[in-house]
Structures are given as C-alpha cells and as structure tokens.
Length: 565
Image (cartoon, rainbow, N blue to C red; front, side, top):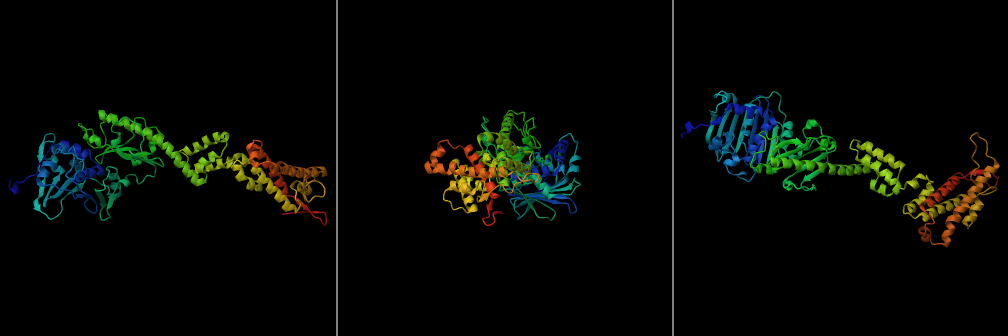
C-alpha cells in the first residue's frame, strides 16, 4: 500500500469503549497503572510520568520499552479486546517477563480522564505517531453498531536515531483539581509489586522526580510484627498451592485508619493488583483486623484456563472452584496470623515495658514464691497483652505492681533495717538462710562494739556489759515519752533496756555460738533453720539495729547522756 494511503483503523463499538474506558477508569491512578503495565510488558526498564498543569493540563507517560512498529499499532494496540497471551502463544515478554496484559482493554483506560490522546512510538529507528479524539470516536457512527475509527496519523515510519520506546500524551484532561505527584506515587505504589529492574518515576511540572518503590506502600504506617511469606508461616494446611504464595504481611502498632484503604491483605498476580485489600471472611469483628495489612502474590491464578480476574483488576471471581479453595486457605492463614500476632505482640510489649521500667519480667516471676507468682503473673500478663493500654500506662501499671510485689517479696515486706539488708541480702537470695542471719548478726555485733567502745572479747558478755538497766554504756529508751509529753515510768524504761540486752545476747547465742560447734552447711541443710526462721531472726536483728541507732552513750564525767551520731 502506498505511503500516502496508509491508514490506522480501530474496530469498536462506541458504547463498549464508553463503558470500559470512561466509566471504568474515572480516576487517575488506575489509568496510569494500565499504561505502566503496558510499559512493563514492553520490557521497559524505566517509565516516567509527567503531570503538567502549568497552563494546559497534560499527562505524559514515556518508557524505554521495545516500542511498536506501524503494524504493531494496527494489529495489537488498536485491536480492542485482543488477548495478547493467546495471540502470541506466549505468557512471557521477549525478555522473559510474565506479561500482565491479557484482556486487551487497558488501552481504553486513558479515555476515562482525557479526550485527546497522542501516541508516539519508536521501534528499530522508525517513528510512528497518531492522535485519537474521544468526540470523533463517538460521532463515527451508531453507538450500538460496530464501527471503524481511523486515528489521525502524524508520523509514519519516520527515520529516528532515538532509542526504542513509547510516549503517550493525554490531553483535554477531564479533571478540575491540580495534580499531586506525591499522592499519585502513593496510589501507584499500592497497585504494583515493583521489580528492581523496573523503575517508575513521577513528577509534577518542574519538580524533582519521585522514584516509586515497594516501601512506599506502607510508609505512613508503623509496623510492629512482620511475616515474610512463606518463610515465616508455620500454618499446617493441605492447600496444595500454599508454598507458591509469597509476600509480606504486617501488623501495625496502632489501628490502621480506614481512610488509608490499607486494612486487609492485597492480592497481586504478575506484579499487579488483582484484588483490593480484604480479610476474605464475612465476619470482620476481630480486633486483629484493624491492625493487619500487607500483600500476597498469587501468580498461579493467571495460569488457570478460566479468567478469574475482574475486568478492572480489583476483585476476583470467588465463586470459581480454585478461588474458593484459595479463599478458604486465606481465612485459615489470617486465623493463624492472629494467634501468632497476639503472642508476638505480648513479647514485644513485654520487652518495651522492661526497657521502660528496668524490670526483667521473666526474672521477676522466677524470684517470686509459687503461691505469689500464681497470683501476680495473670495480672501482669493481662496488662502486657492489653492492646488498648498505651505503652506509658502499661509500663506505669507494671512498675507500680512491682513496687508492691518485688522480687523476694517476703524479704521485702519485712522492711528490714538497711544495715541488715546490706549484710544479708545476697545470701538470702542464694537461699543460704543461716549464713544470711549470721552476716546480719555479725554486722550488728560489730556496730554495737564500735558505738559503745567496748573492748570485751566475748560477744555475749559485751552485750550484757553495754545494754541493760543501771549504769551501762548504751541506753536505748531515754529519749522516748508518752503522747502527752510525760516520761515513761522508770520500770518501763528499765524493761526496754533489759530487753535490748537479752535480745542482743540471744542473737549471739542463737547465731554465733552454734557455728562454733557445727558446720554451717549442716545447719543449713538440716531444715532446722528455714526461710521463715531466717526472716524472723532478721526482723529481730533489724529491731535491735533500730534501737541502736538512737542509743546514747553514758557520759563517764557527769553521769549524763549525750547523743552519739
């Protein structure tokens, strides 16, 4: 055919184009997504989207794919409803990519946002370009009868030194609001699983280009638990295709806002969305659902004989037998995820509470007696697992509870004198109860000797010399008065002084003296001196230390008393 008689021809029913173009693709992201998919199938490594609203609104989509010849335009691009995979008897592109395009309808998407379309394409150093006009298409004949429409050719096989590729320019944009590159980038990131060797850029007017990547999908969310699929999934299932499903699932720290359209799991096939986020269940009352997002690739659905992907690639035919099996598996998977999430989330919250409070919760439990741990653990676990409690509130609740019931609570609840604690704590925690008492007693004996100045070599005799009624070196009750200010009777004071003496002598007799005759390990292991015996004995020593703190030493010159610091 002579060059001046060359013609491009679109065979169509105008009503079909209106339904599949204008009505199905009324927003910008899915329109651009269809054109990006074409670039991917053309083995492009880059596609650039340029949004222009500085003057006449235009959208320019250009790629470095293999481009189209004039025959390609006529026989492939302008054939509405062409099934590329069956026509070419191949599921892959020349460079081995699993092709996305199947129905041959995506090319109509641009009519959803623009009424004038210019296509420029270069293949093997030949440039071809043409224009399509929506109004001309509608007026080309009866809307319900098949018609031929001839786009206006602007270049036919013009020699070009430029690289292969295709540029589509959308004009007469049917959109009032200004363009937003960041918003479009966010939306496009949710429509594709982007290969490392396929880069998508978008820019607005003269601003810098934005590189769209997979991380952008969930960049506004703070993830708490992640599962790589199938590596991190231990669900036992008889679903034969479970190991072919891969992806990334995320549970967030806070509930996902419904406005993000990210609640649920998105399904992709051949790197493009085929089912909007959902939970694959009629019941969505679980608290877990508001935290779950992520994506799964189910490429096998593209290999089924029957097409199960909706025309707008936003839903699947769940009534299909294979899809019913997939849906059942996804329901099982989400139930498994919920169980695993609750366990992992409790562990994470426990770790954060431990960091905030300095309390190692598992070690705390280990240092509680069984009867106390059995009461404490359910309460603390409930605080840790309560997803509604903020981290600050949960940490404060655990801290307060720990203050009331710390490690070794029986020891803590005795409120022992600080000197007694310092001397006995380590041995008590090691369950060496007799040695704990021995060290506390030694600390008391040495403190009495230091404060009194006694040089008596016998510990028991020293106690009798230092304390008691009469003219002894230390007196412990002289400064105490009744609430009304009156002094206690002389006999009461003497009884208290004698009590300090005899209790102190008893500590020596009951602690120091047995060790001089028996092995301490025998005393410890015999059961003669239990944990409670130790605590009771430490309480006595603590009482004696408290009295010693306020004891006065006799003034040998004027027989008066002075406070010894």
